Image (cartoon, rainbow over all chains, first blue to last red; front, side, top):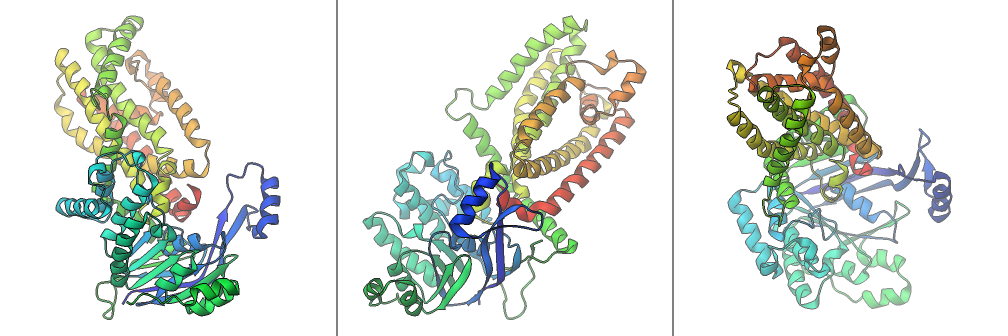
Length: 260
Length: 290
């Protein structure tokens, strides 16, 4: 049983490289009202404030909220990248985070070289890396491009490569940003199929998206973030009803979730 | 300060890895996290080596000689400097050229580690922000990369030794501990400079200037035997001098001065302590800084 527990997590970003601090301070303060100073009088942004929830096997959580609400920061914190400045995160299970299409790939290296690096990161043997390369080549349909630098790929090709690579491993906890569901129609059809098997295989999924349709389809629980705090937490239809304007909610309320 | 513990899961959770990240302060937790980061890097050493290999390959991709440009440029530089400075310093070329070759190759290793180390974390910002991975891996990558460069430059050393019939002496065995010390120092130097360089962005150019000055006050182009006894004692306070001496002397077939080893070990201990302390204190903040 995989579990992911977030208790009272707060994250503050220091603004170290603010060149004209007073100006930035004014602008940020006016824009969000979330710029403060910490105990040492450094300028900080409070990206998350006291976020708590826990996920158990079978839960597919959607994160919703306006830009700058802290969705990506929360995903990064759950992935263990940003260590919180307050609170506690407990991750039980093998976790994969798909945060951006590039996923830390080096654009100057070829597709195959990037796949090899990813394999080594996962502790794969030479044979496993070869299998990974074959699997990614077959699924992404990029066989003839994998020996070229990733820099030369179109953005759609980068998404394909990133998606194929990310979904080649079967995690127990899967964290995704919405980029995964962007791509050309032909690829999207295959991607959806593959993603479904991964999501079915994963015990816990967390998806951050602005797209209500996607959230209705993929999630069985939604957390609405605003200003770095949890504004609502519950079943998708209830949260969306409060979040969306009535006419938009009417459009998505008929969508049935995927069978898992 | 946040901390992580990877506890063996109990009976109910047979095979799940567990990671706990808390913001609790405490030296014990921070220490455990720092040590875990280092052991994880050791476990991922193949990744560090491959990253280093790709770095070199990338730098010379599409060039005719590939990484052997490193060998060639070192050879040309040593030939040019060697014959000129042997005349300027009234040195016998037979003794001076092997000395200069070894010194310069070793110095290139140290100074490149220092300058590249200062950006080892900021350059890896993509990787740091996209997945949880040990931060000390990025320092190991820089050391591995420069070890590869050193290997290419060793060809020049071998050729010069062959031309001037230099045979490493009986103290050659001491090269093994010296190399280990060098690797440990290189790693510690990268880590501490990388941390400071990520927090304060004016550090990398400062490191460059400091290494430039260090190049002139360290016996690389000039031989320490040109100094008087009293001056030699002052020179010995230069950490780079002691470190180079413990590698250079056995290679040139000379006996290693015991005091050089003592000084090298003292400086290395100080460097390791400073580096580990900085890592202990700042490790959780790295993703916020890069």
